[in-house]
Length: 183
Image (spheres, rainbow, N blue to C red):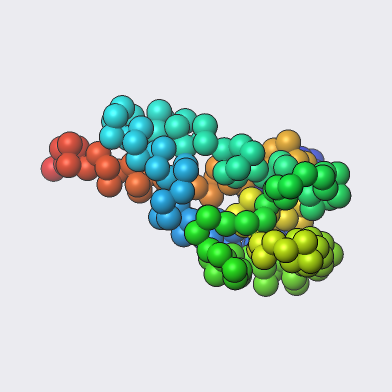
């Protein structure tokens, strides 16, 4: 990947490791029964079309599932109001950090400690207000985008890039009984 947002500079080796860790973590998340996974599977069953299935999965992203731009704004301090703090809270992992993102957290701590400090401060403030919430995939995606210097408007592309291959696996699992193998 090149930093098209920074005169097409190449990613450094540490940035590549961080991006790889993010992609690996997202691949694990695809195999949870989250909104995008379920939408993709239903579209695959109904349409038998991979592009329609991707579109269905992408259509679930927004305020609750995958609010990457909103989480980016929370991490930069642009958006701090409201009951829901984008990028925190997880339907699948409660009361503890999401282990799928442990490597991402570790690499961010090395490469962008100020972002980890910000994440931990937000988490601490949430706990003080009675909410035991931890960073979720949107938070880590936004943090990686920030670490790479990526503008908020294109930060969701990291989520999409990370999930396309595992979504393809799920799509194939749904339609495989109807697919005739070529010999």
